[in-house]
Amino acid sequence: MARQELIDYIRQNLADGANAEQIKKSLSAIGWPAVDINEAYYAVSAPTQLKPKPVPQTVTTKPAAVFSNLFGRSFSIYKNQFKTLLAITALPTLISTLGVFIVGFLSASAPSRLPSPNTAAGFLSLIAVSALVGSILIWGQASLLYAIKDKTGIMESFQRGLDKVGSMWWVAILSLFAIMGGNILLFVPGTILSLSLSLSLVVLINEDAKGMDALLKSYEYIKGRWWPVFWKFFFLGLAMIASLLIPAGIIAAAKNIFLNEVFNFACGLFVTPFVLIYTTLIYADLKAEKGEVQSSSDRTWLVAISVLGALAIAALAALVVGMLAFSKPSPSPRLDNQKSAGSSALPNLLDGIRVETTNFNARDMKRIADIRQLSIAVEMYYADENKLPATLDELYPKYISMNLTDPSTKEKYDYTRRPNLTDYSICAVMESSGEKQCVSSLSQQ
Image (cartoon, rainbow, N blue to C red):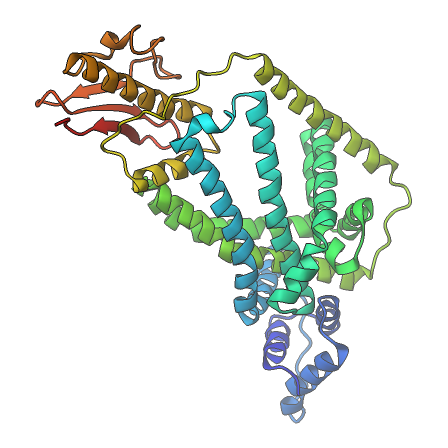
């Protein structure tokens, strides 16, 4: 018996004016057996055999109408496989997010234990962490593509996806090199090449194409159909912006970093599967129209552009590492003797989230380290003098060797001595969020 979701899918597309043969080819391309497709078509047509033959409809080619049809087909698959796709997306996203949170927390609570991002060692460490997080996310994408293609379960999708992590990385890197090379030539070639290679990962999973072959096959599928594919992705982008604009604005107005991270996590969780389904259907439609294409035997042009892009990226990375290696590192803050009576586990965790969400912004990290170092100096002053300093200037040079100021404005940090003359706070405004971060001390008894 034909599956009800397949019957509903065929009815919806026929009602939208889609060509029956193209629907069959699209379903076959994403893994539906021919027996199931034929049974579903029989179930769709059987109740209407006694009705007058409908007037043939002309298949529309207007971009908005084509997008509407493609969006509806994508949503039908998304709805039918929602639980499986959500579970596959959740695990890698959660692992990578927690990993970045931990690094951010350590950077905020104990920055002296980690290399600063504004040093060569810190920059290379950041690349290594990014590669690890990227591998986890790529594993999730490969697993999703298998679930979409073959309707595999969660564990089977993860197992098959794990085998493709290396291949997915290689194709992604080659795409990056090629697109960078195209952008070096001019913006227009870079844009054309970006779209032409957009199906590379889908081709890799669906046709088991390797490396450069996946890129060339993606190029061949989109060749001659660049504008129709462009409009499909363009309208998808508009739909995503329209649906997320209001909630994103509300979150931004709240100026709550934690809510912002939860919102970003939720967007990735629910949007990623849909985008991959949508992209897979674009590939399936092109394959149904053209048949399975062969990668061009002349790949010299793509190799040349990729080499150009690789050299540009290598030169840029070498320049950044060189500049950081020869730059004077910021002094390491001393946090082991800190007495911050206003601190607790929750503010420290929020500090970590703040630093992570600014991608380890060096200036915000320095501000946090500076006010904590100043807090140590104030506590040392209080222990010697049995009073708080009237201004931070009284700390130099006995309790702190250099005059710490905001790295952007060069102004002194905000120091407030409370009326009881035993409580104080030292604050800095974070550049990324506009929020004020403070270190304070309770009264000493």
